[in-house]
Length: 237
Image 1 (cartoon, rainbow, N blue to C red):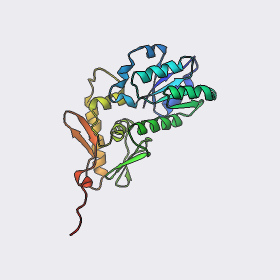
Image 2 (cartoon, one colour):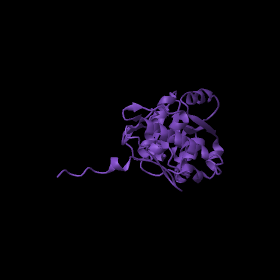
Image 3 (cartoon, helix red, strand yellow):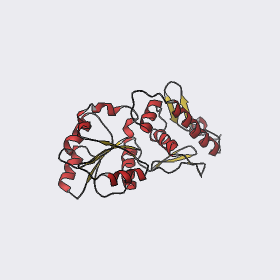
Image 4 (cartoon, one colour):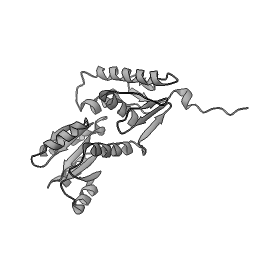
């Protein structure tokens, strides 16, 4: 999971280490970041990135700039002490959460995942597609009742398909979500390789043998059930 991390002052190393401990990938940004073309953040696939903003004098302006640029990313405010009045202002400006530090990365990750899954129309912590039960909290999926072990990179790619279940996700969107935004993607074949690995694991675990990840030529990939699983059963007689 990529997160943009803005911290006021020095001494931010403990938070960086904490984020890395949960395999989050923080990208440190400074005040100048908010003066750039923030519309670039709206690129498909980049909406799975989150912002962790340290409360400072420019916080409300930073949140406002992000939201006015059309950024739908999760925005979590980090402050060193409870401040209900300013927390309310941040939430009213468009922040998704306001948290008093110190806080464990495990909790931050859960809060970000909650915002992301709701933004994609998922209320529960998991979604079932045929024989596949996929989780939004980083757990390995279950297929036909059995856990299927995915690598860290496979998890990141599979998560994009799960968030957009039954919808086509472009290769570029997956690449951006996993590797970060880039205008050129010379290594996008790596996505094909990982998709093949995930597809094979799902198919081997599924009682039906269905691989669940469909390649939509020229468009991308889609996580979906087999047609026979979706077809209603005809009434007897």
